[in-house]
Image 1 (tube, rainbow, N blue to C red):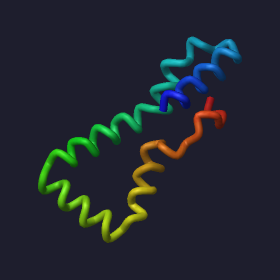
Image 2 (image 1 turned 120 degrees about the horizontal axis):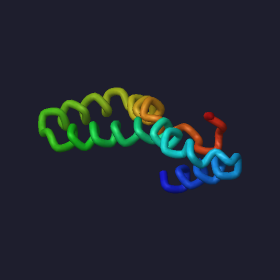
Image 3 (image 1 turned 135 degrees about the vertical axis):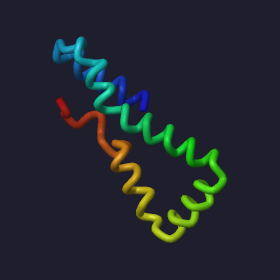
Length: 81
């Protein structure tokens, strides 16, 4: 994430749009931070952890779906602004 954030900043600075960095950072990384927080809370709850492990064992493609929905698979180098 740090490499993606630095690539985002560099792209905005080169385009003389450094003031847009905070908004672009939130748009790019806030979903991942929220998803990580949710996963951490689920992992700390015994019942939720057992249910999640069972579900992910039965449907492993949910891991990729979760990554996609959280923005994990989005490239920082792809123009988004």
